[in-house]
Image (cartoon, rainbow, N blue to C red; front, side, top):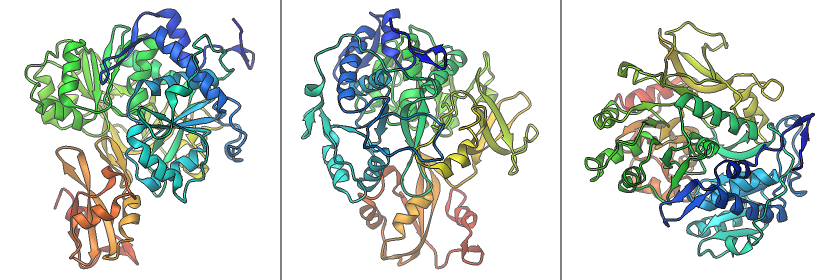
Length: 541
């Protein structure tokens, strides 16, 4: 075996998850595809990854990157090294796992992009990522083709398709050689995954996740949540989301456990998976957990194998938690973000349900503090901004030094710097952390971040809109949705706005409510009083 050296330390294992897991548990099933019924052992996953790595290497998705890719800015020098990128637009499929394991071997970067994005958003992200290869599932051929043709996108490289795609076949392009791949020499501080998160305006930001950060999130999850090699979990988060990789998939792969995926979420199917496959762990957004309690098979499904379930991506209603508790499932709330973790907290053994509105206490290798506007730690019980520090924090935002400094501080020079979450929190007398709201106007709809400024920027271009403010309102299905408060022509309808946003905004960002004002309230010269608008038209109206 060849040993690669990184600063005098042998780190041959970094990135090559599938080869190491194959050595330890070759015959254990690591991935099951509920859509096709296929199951893949860790030996098979490593073989698929070896073949896929050869395809990626041929396209420049390597540690050395693509010569055509933009050089790092001065602000990025000395931060995580970023190799060549492969962008993929797809639902949850085995090929995404192949690409993750394969980029680990080549030293490249996997950049999964949301298939929910509008044409403009997808075009801008493709341009920002600057991949040397794009992979698309056939269901999104037209969306990707439109994005590639958009003025905002300069990519003109190869595109490979999954399934019955109009593009050249990904499966046909993968070499037959599945023998061991001579993995690249990469370090813990090198990038492995780009995951995008909402931007306050314009294009979503790509978050740079390193090999070390991904590994440390697995350590934190395994040690704080008590995961086991025999665990089985249905994966209901999309794999363009940190939830799809870091909540349970990678921690389970770390242990040799089993992950079950499907193209679409179906509450009945997930209940069937829990029952038939003896699933032991489930993590989902509140809307998914609620849909499962309302499914026809809820009462008859055998949930006895579930050791615990967790809710994330927004506050979970008490009624939903009680429904799961009534089935003897230990459901609690979690908290995380793409920029840190996301698995930062856990409920202690024997926790009291009086603490159910909290997210628990920090994990083994996570520090949490609550600070005031000047960055000073506040006393327990006082509400302030939540900050987190952990080796599982992301490195920075890709090609966005200003936003990086605001969120990550000095992480480029100091790996122990705190990450600013932008969320308000307090710590109670027992050390449990309670999330109290958002420092900024962002709200979460179905586990997806929505930034009103971006939505308002699009809506304000409508001929009948003079001014607009988007406020969050409660929704039984998605937790929160947007309501557009418009100053302008009151003949405007919600259907008009819906049609206008088509192709410009992802569907989850489009407002589901509409209200009118004669004049926007102001708190100063030409400054809209957003709080007054929200108090009048939000949930308190």
